[in-house]
Structures are given as C-alpha cells and as structure tokens.
Image 1 (cartoon, rainbow over the protein chains, first blue to last red):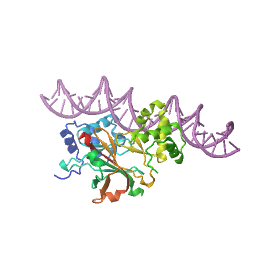
Image 2 (image 1 turned 45 degrees about the vertical axis):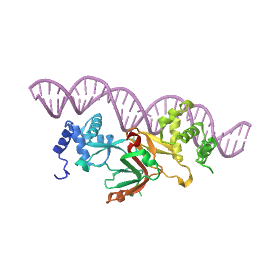
Image 3 (image 1 turned 90 degrees about the horizontal axis):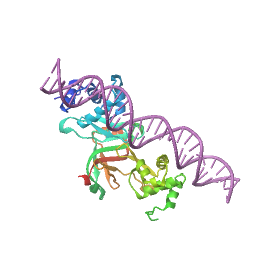
Image 4 (image 1 turned 120 degrees about the vertical axis):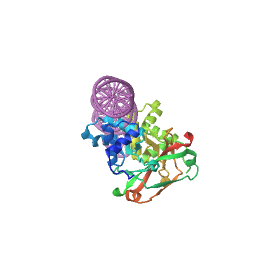
Length: 146
Length: 146
DNA sequence: CCCCTACATGCAAAGGCATTGCAAGAAGAT
DNA sequence: ATCTTCTTGCAATGCCTTTGCATGTAGGGG
C-alpha cells in the first residue's frame, strides 16, 4: 500500500470510523487540514484556517480533544502556553513521537523527525528521577534567525 | 567565598541592587522564597506562598517579569500552560541552563543539572533548522510513578 | 536629614485561551 | 424510515496573563 500522500477524503473518513468517531464535516475538515499542514497547530490557528467553513470554535476545540483521545493527533506544548496539535503518524509501529524545536526569536516550530537524542545519565540525578522520556522540546535559535 | 547557603537578606538585597532593581519588600520576599524552594514555581504558587505578606498579585507578577529581565530568575514552561519561574544560578560563568523533566503523571518537575544531552544530527533536518539550542524540556514518567 | 524624581505598588479591569452546559441537529444502526 | 447516541452551535464561565492609572516609596542629591 502506497504511502497515502493523497488526502483522500474517504481515507480520512475510514480513519475516523476506525477510531470510533463519527464522520462529521468538521472532523474531516480538521483532519484534512492537518494532512496538508504537517506541523503543530493551535486551536486558534485551526479555527482561523477553517474560517470559511464556519464551524463553531467550540466544535473544533472538542474535535481536537476527541481526535487526541482517539490517537489520531497528539497534543504538544511548545512553551507559549497554547496547546498545539499535530497529525500522528498512523503507520503501524513506525509511529514514533519526534522532538520539536522552537525558535525563540521567530517562533517557528519544527518537527525534528530525524534527530536522535541521547541522554547521558552522568552522576545520579537522571536515573533516580527519570524513568521514561516520552516527549522532547528544544528551544533555541533557528538558522534563519542566526 | 562560601556558597551562600544562607538566605542572607543583605545578600539578596545586594543581588537586586546589582541587577539595577530597587530593594522592595515584595522583591526580597520573592527572591527569598526562591532561595528556599529551588524549583520552578508559578505566579499563583508564589502568590499563595506569600499570602500572609499580603502583597498584591499583580506586584508579584511584575516582580517575576522584572527579575527575569534582570537575569535573576528564568522562566520555564513545563507544558501545562502556566509560566513558572526559578532562581537562576548566579555563580559567575558556572551558570548553565539545565534541562527540565516533567512527569506527565504526577506533574513533578525536576531539574536535570547533571545530565548531558547529545543531539545526533542524523540526516538533514537538524542542521538545516537548528542553529543553537538554549533550552531543553523532557517529559515522561518519573521513577516514582513507574 | 529633608527633598525629589523615577521606579514600584495596589487596585481594578481587560484579554486570551481553555473548558463546559444545554438544547437542537445529524450520523449510523435497526 | 425510525430511533438512539453522538455532535454541533451558542453562550457562558474560569483561570492565568497582562496592563492602566493613581498613589506610595526607595534611594540619590542637596
């Protein structure tokens, strides 16, 4: 099966159905937008992006929560006190959370899909506190702002 | 000079003065509290902790901002959409930002002072986007919640 | 030691995003 | 086609963050 680069609406509907969610216009629209904008988006950004569809903001909000609950999107916080959501990789077990990088100057958010991060336990603190790392956020300066 | 374990009020005042800030009761109180509670605290937590002093919440809020601007405290966001502040290491150049770890279950925040983190650029994405990393946040499960 | 000015505080209010209650509406099974 | 259950719209609330403005005070100068 080819990697569905095509935002086939039917595929999205199937995705929703399989997740146990009803296929409603707002949900499909949200998923479709994520499909074509593969990076963390806030509720507000999504509402604005779909403004022409005239969905209620609360509906989109609850859809994001629902999609998160269904595992279709994941919620990330890049440090500006605004929740963001992004499409989760649905490819079976390939599914791996990736670190995010936020430029402290321009605010651009990047998904570091390819980067490996290694924690060196050093002395004692790490092992005594950290059991498992599930999310990584890096902040700094991006190359464009350098 | 010994590492000032003593929350000497005079030392705190000097710290403020050197930072170009006036020594007011709220500021000293805030710094003193940080001195004895060395971990990220939110504005709300601070207000509550200093409730008996009856400082205005807005005053404490602005003090946090001022202290941050002066480099005495740093602002961190552990992913719960609430700003937190913590005392910054003032020891000359020893001063190094450390990664933070937040347990997604109990919410406990840990400062990983000793941990070294290595980013493996892998393919292309890292180098093309990241110029400099200044802040690291890890989330996961702590050993107590394991 | 008193005076002055710039900076800080208190009080109040506004803004933004997150979250929820409720009645009307629509998806999907029968 | 009908019915049940999940969703949507609309409105309102809550919490945290942020700011305006008049009053008060720290700290330098006289």
